Image (cartoon, rainbow, N blue to C red; front, side, top):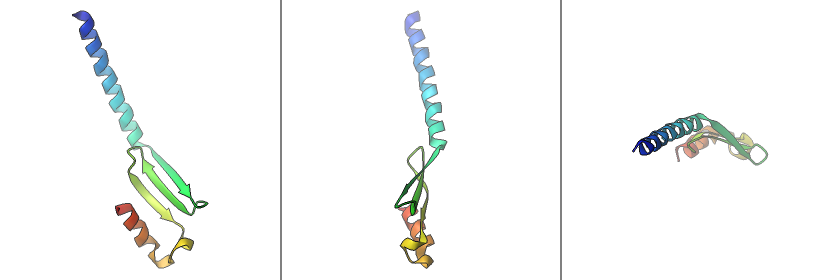
Amino acid sequence: MLNLQGMMKQAQQMQRRMQETQAKLGEQEREGTSGGNLVKVVLNGKSEMKSISIDKSLVNADEVDMLEDLILAA
């Protein structure tokens, strides 16, 4: 019975460490680029898009902000 209790305690510790690691990963951000840095996207560790940047040379300069907002909302 003591061995089973020890295994349960170890399992709980592993689960707690896994949750802590997942939380840390969720806080990290990574940037990806394409088109020679003309398009940049920032994602967090949960694969949620945090920001997008599109070079104004690719679109009508007056509409870039709205396009970025629409893509981010999608």
